[in-house]
Image (cartoon, rainbow, N blue to C red):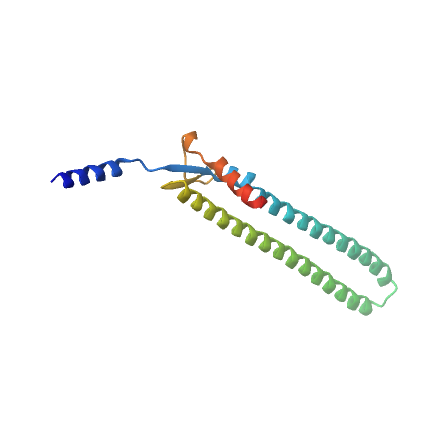
Length: 168
């Protein structure tokens, strides 16, 4: 009988212990995570290179268009229309090529960011398990935490963990 009472008391004590809950400000986390900052910088640089390429091609194309206009005045109407159609087709092909490169850059950036978010979620899960959390909630814009005590905010610890692992 004593064993049954002892077991029930032990079960009550264990079940009465509060769950350990923390939350992470997702916006702050992603804004201060160095790997995310580096990815954004890399893709911004690639976008700038693509923009310069687009500007350069546009300038060359405009110069060719001006040159064509002056040549077209000395051509027969049929010949001018043929060359204009070829010129226009080449312009469309260049535009499509640049658009495709832009889409590939965006897709590549989105894929890398999706991978980063997945990595962050796994790190938060591992942190939670290692530190005895029952729940770690996401806060910030679009998050599920409308209010949380500052003592339950583990954002800075997660940022520090992620940045230290990224530096290695």
